[in-house]
Length: 237
Image (cartoon, rainbow, N blue to C red; front, side, top):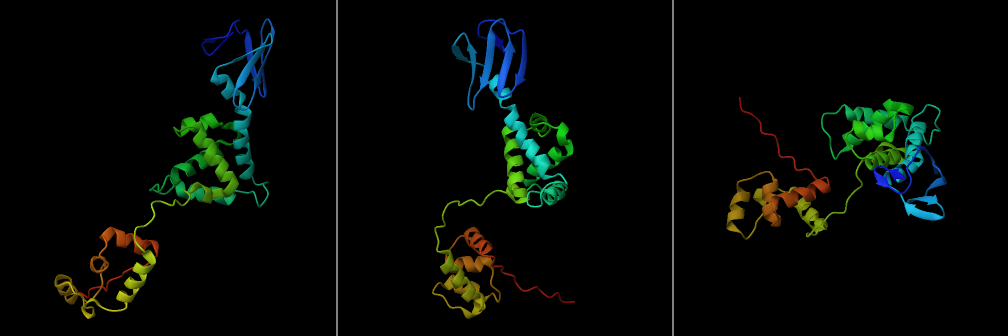
């Protein structure tokens, strides 16, 4: 028997995959049993592993369930709590945008393509059309069915913990913003000279006051939604 170029004894006459049992017509009564993680060939009370392609085809029934659930969620007859029609429209809007932030547009393309293909589409066809992996297709279709458009966004990541006490920095910055730079006195003569020349706070001055890198202070203020808007200059006519 041979499967995809691998020989296992006698040759195959004909092959029909019908999960969960894969039966092959041979001289002997042979039955392929598809388990969760591996497939075996039962022949003359001997078990031997077969090629992974047969295992992949054996799991085709499970793969198609993902696409079936997706099509059921975007159908007009779907239950209100399980309907994803509004989320599908949000995906179509996202696809028309020029920028792709954090890969959301690519995932929306997958959702729209699966909806346009309908019952004629398959997981493999979607993966080939989008030049991606089968696992990628199954993952994002499942997440869309479970939680809608919000599931296509990346989950918040913890990242490296901050080295600075952000709450204390924010309190000091807010107190400084209530004043003007020329009203503040410091021990550093160079910084005092720079403060006397300014009437409006800037990120550069605040970073020197806090002795922090410019980018670090900007990130702290951005995360806490603190915006420094300098006064607009009035053009003289």
